[in-house]
Amino acid sequence: WQRRPCTAALAAAAFAATLAAPGGAAAQDGPGTSGAQVLQLPAGSRAAGFSGAYAAGAGDADLVFYNPAGLLTLSGGFSAAYQRHVAGISLGSAAGALRVGDFALGLGVSFLDAGDIEVVEPDPDLGGQRGRKTGETASARETAVRLAAALPLARGRLRVGAGLGLATTDLAGLSRSAPLADAGVQLELPYVTLGAALRNLGGSLSGDGAEDAPLPTELRLGAAFELAAEGGLGLLAMADLVSQLREGGATVLAGVEAGWLRGQTGRLGAVARIGYDGWGGGDSGLGALRLGAGLALGRLALDYTYQNLDFFGAVHRLGVRWSWPNS
Image (cartoon, rainbow, N blue to C red):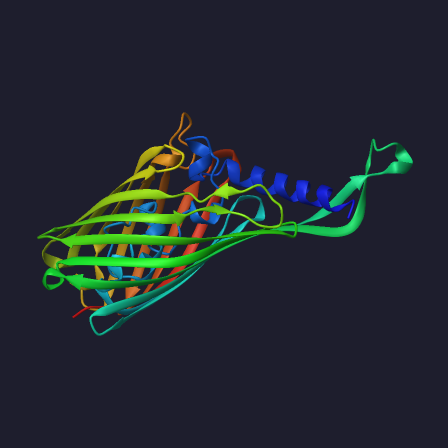
């Protein structure tokens, strides 16, 4: 019992130190009082290449993380992504979507694993001036699960969706959790799709006597513009205006995808992506840009995203998607 506070303090310090700098929204702007970092880092495979600018996105299961209304743009799909973050932190997600009649259903899971550290306590034989290993380890992990549904209106041009979920954290054996809710809408116009989403609606992470931490509730307003040329070339640009409703910060996320789009070239597609993350801009521009690429064969696609975090080094995300678009 006497060693548990030390264990929690060490794990908390390690988790906070490794996540504060590499581009978490709360760490870059605003007071940074929100909990659940897993909800603040971009989830998904292709979406990461757009720096998470996905409120008006279409065509893959990762929309369950950004705007559930977009799930109506595909008949079925699956995606998975993994990233080795700084300091050995693992970040990943998986999502699935299925069209059932007029409805679309989606399920998404994201996780953040900071690994284990050895617990060291003051050595009483040396007056507490040096530490000794206890043989115990402390861990820090976060997960978020979402279940969403969407329904078309106005002959399919207007899409509405909503979701429910649960965010949990485990920090050195101290567990906290909070239910969350999402809601979104998309309007499809010629060449342009508009989207709006409320994400992470809910209370605060609480439990096990730990201090409560509010969820990072945000409002997103987004737009997507797609242009296809002869010969299979195409361009897709997306941007989100993101407002943190509790912390008060706001920024722009944006991304561009260009190349031989799968929908324009039959079975093969190859694109390059560049994304801008306003949360990572700051004075040094730390992590503001993401570069990526995608290769598609039929309904299967592979995605890669690169981000340079300056003195923290570079991080790489790999992902796979299987998408069955609406006919």
